[in-house]
Image (cartoon, rainbow, N blue to C red):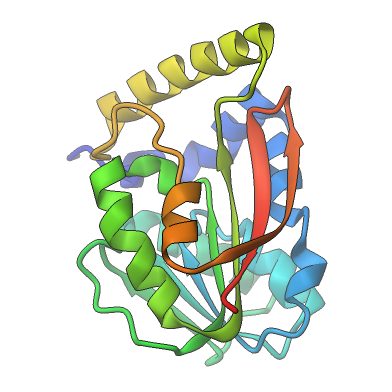
Length: 214
């Protein structure tokens, strides 16, 4: 099997829980209540469907488009939602590379990328984030969470050690381009987005942010 997230789809949640317990899931859900007014959401790199499940439990009226470069991850999402009888024609699953996929302009009022942007280099983020922002309607929300390098010696040392192991692992098993963390906030600001709130955990290594397109 070629290097891709397809190789990890069946065990991804197990690996995540082994490494971080429920910390990543807590990041995913940190500001989920702020999405209650959204009607049409794009999720990038959703993975195995846990965020979609929580959204649909709370907001069954949502239309959700899930864009993922892993066919196996999309199948995991569908299987999870089918188990909870939440598959419907309000959901669209797209197998595509976000860097190459033609994103519609001003279509979505919500955009979600959770532990997704860390797969890209700075030059890729510089091109991708303006396209993502353009796909948001005015007043739309960009909900994102990921890893970061916190301030302080011990917190920074802790994060760098984790990130070194993680990038080594994912570079061996998947086809991601990035070899190190590129933090996206400068590109969000350059795209005209405004950060409304931020929450950190795991010694500041994990964060969730809610951005607004004014």
